[in-house]
Length: 243
Image (tube, rainbow, N blue to C red; front, side, top):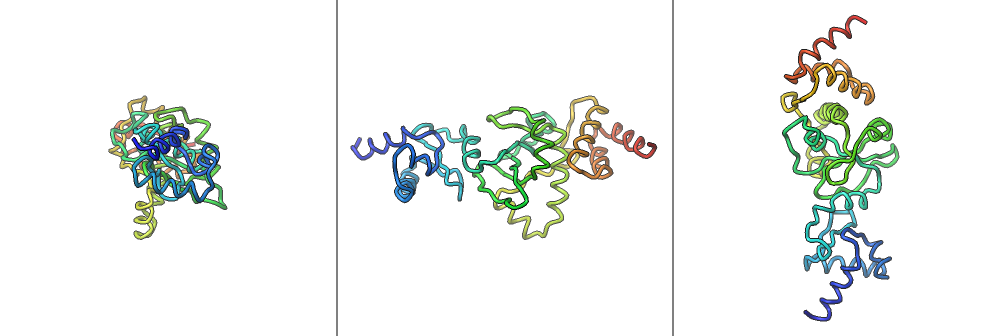
C-alpha cells in the first residue's frame, strides 16, 4: 500500500461513518475548497459515496461499507429539520399493509417561508407543516432504522389526503415530483388490511382525520372500501347523520 493511500485511509478513519464538508473542516483542518476537492477524488475512487445531489453529505465506506445502515444519520445531517416516517413505510411497519416502498417515505417539517430541503437518494421526502407535525410527531414512536414512525391511522389519513392532492396536480408537476423523490405511496382501500377491532380502528382513523383536517365524508368513503372496516365505517357514517 502506498504512503498516499495510507494517508487517505488515516484521514477517512478519522471521520464519522456519515460526514459533510463541515466535518472535514473540523476533523481534518481543511479549507472548504480543499475538502470539496478531496470529496470529488475519494468519490471517484469509491472510498466514499454521496448521500444525494445537493446534500453535501457522504457515506464513509472506509469506516463502514454498509452505507444503508446509516441512512437516518445522513437524512438528519442533510435536512436538519424534524422528520417522521409516513406512507407505505409506516403502514408496513405497523402491519396495516403488505406493500413495501423501495425508499423510506418520510415527512419533513417546514415552515411557510422555506419549504426546500435536499433529499437523500434512498428516501422519498415530502414537506409537512408545523401544524401537521404538532399533531403527528408527539404520537410517533421509535421504529426501524432509528426513525420516529407515525401511528398507522395518521399515516393512512395523510396518504389519502396526499393522494387526492397529488392527483389534482398537472401531469408535468407529478412527473417532476416523482423524479425528485418527493412523493409517497397513495394506497387503494384494498391495499389496506387492519388486524384490529373494526370499531376501534375506524374511530382512530376518524380522530386522526379530524386532527389533520381531512374531509370526514371523503375519509368515511375511503374506509368503507377496506373490507375489514366496511361495516364499522358504514355504522359510523350513519351515526354522523343523526347527532
